[in-house]
Amino acid sequence: MSEADAPVEAKPKVRWGRVALFYLLAVGWVSLIAAVLFVTGRRDVSGGGGVSVLAIVLAALAMPAPLVSALIVGRLDQRPALIRTTLDRFWRKLPRLVLVVVLVIAGLLLGMLGLTWVLGNVLGLSGVGRVLFAQPDLLANALLLFPSMDVDQVAKLNASIPSLWPLLGLAYAGALVAGFTLNGVFAFGEEYGWRGWLAEELRPLGAFWANLLTGVLWGVWHAPLILLGYNYAGYAKLGTAFMIAWCVPASFVLWRARQVTDSLIAPAVLHGAINGFAGVFLLVLVDTNPLIAAPMGLAGAAAIAVVAAVFWWLSRKRAGRVE
Image (cartoon, rainbow, N blue to C red; front, top):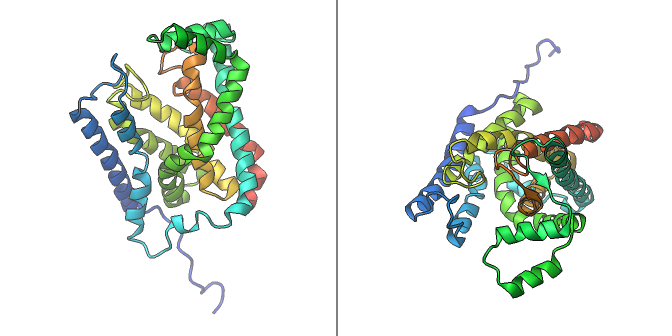
């Protein structure tokens, strides 16, 4: 048989039916959890009552939805499930995984803080917030966050809270520990679906369009909980659009982490570490609007986009070898 007569290998195509089934299952799961929260009275967590432990637990249970949905849809295929190869040669991949996580998390934390300082402290843009540097200012802001403290508790807080840079160092270390432990375990539930199964399904679109679409789908997936006030307190109706704006650049970072480390655990650890340092911005920023300010507002999304661009450029040779 000549080369001209050889059968032409079919170009891979996106299986949109499979993608739709996966997404409906994932959205259905998180919608069910949102319905439980709604029925139990957690209809607006932005109210003065705060967030109950039950609400936090139920919201955390949304994270395995993409994993379970991917496993269910994967049962329709004859090929091995991605989860079977997740730990393949893990110890050989670990040094690069750690390097990527350490550098990317440092870039995200410093990028968000630096951009906030430029836009808020220097340019005075409304909603971005201002970075607090001095220990007395950080203490005063902490007391606003926890107004019910008694005198002894205030004294202990005053003795323990440092100025900005030591505080960021602690937040950074804590984020890494959280990413490699409990937070990373929970985040794996999301990453297996988004940067794992869905990334494989959307691969024929190319990296750019696959990540753009994944980011949009990932952002919309949060809508049932955002409508209850999560993530963007006081902006339930607008929150989903801003979540999409955040998820799109974040998807590029997380996908690239999987690509250059050849491990699905890398985006899970990164995702968990981001969740781990997000809370420090409540303490170090004042005069913020959740739609605009870091970590989840437009300033945070812009910082992630810059880190994504730098990450992609610096890792281009490694990514080419993996591909």
